[in-house]
Image 1 (cartoon, protein in one colour):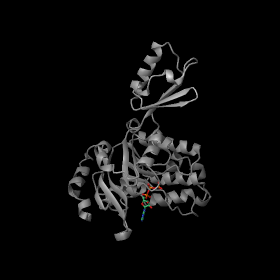
Image 2: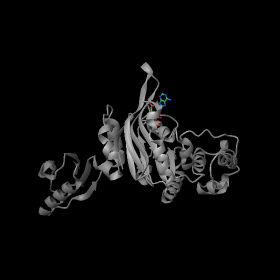
Image 3: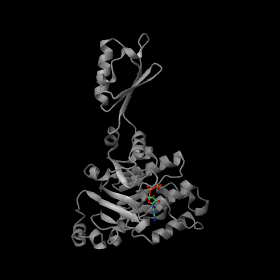
Length: 344
Ligand SMILES: Nc1ncnc2c1ncn2[C@@H]1O[C@H](COP(=O)(O)OP(=O)(O)OP(=O)(O)O)[C@@H](O)[C@H]1O
């Protein structure tokens, strides 16, 4: 698809923006986007027909296995490349052709920032502020990421986690409406990661729209309003956290009381469960309808005056959903069917 096709409708959208940004709910619309590297025999499709939207003020988490295509997708949204086909709109505009209008409204923290190692932290930010429209003060930016007391330290002497925080200060120096964070806490210790989550939460509270990629599932669970899990260039699952984990089986486990053996229990199907696993005195059911199985099991136990000790009922975790996707969607023809679900 040619350049002009990616960026149609520019006049219309520019007008909309000048009328006070009445472009509707979505800050980002990605529609059936492909990204191909190389050509001919060496062509490789890193992104294969993905679609999703990010609403204003939302934190959208983009997860995925290594090489799933997250960074390739972020680069397209940031305007560092053109999709091979499909369309991307950011603030209703084309990220490549309208980069000059979009750029002042967005902050970007990529995986590799290429900071000049001999500059101090403050010099780095001053230099960056000089290249940015409407920056806040360097001191304010450093304070916001907890680096103020390191301002005179050379970048090469910062720890990996501190360098990531400096990247974050640079990405947020102009208090952007839209922020891309590509693995912002990689290399941080748990304390640094929690501190960064607090910073990200504050940014969200002020209305910043955020796109976040991460390999830390806990990070996505804590921060994201909605998630998309990519695998092999496609979106394999998407939605809110409960929507994603609801697609995977829940588990109920308990120990049966003394005087009972496993064969005293009716078949798992009677409780609406799919299978049963025995480990010593402990029984575990897998079910796609946790409420129904729990109700049936407890009703059955009460009718026999039976106490189920160590009773534990839990939904699938994001980690289980993620691993299931990674293991089962190697051929993954999934993106197209999920388009409706992914759109806000
Ligand atoms: N410039 C390029 N030329 C050829 N292939 C590339 C290029 N950039 C990325 N790729 C390939 O595209 C695929 C997707 O890469 P990408 O960096 O987008 O994945 P990712 O999901 O961000 O991975 P990770 O989580 O490991 O950072 C990978 O197989 C990668 O090797």
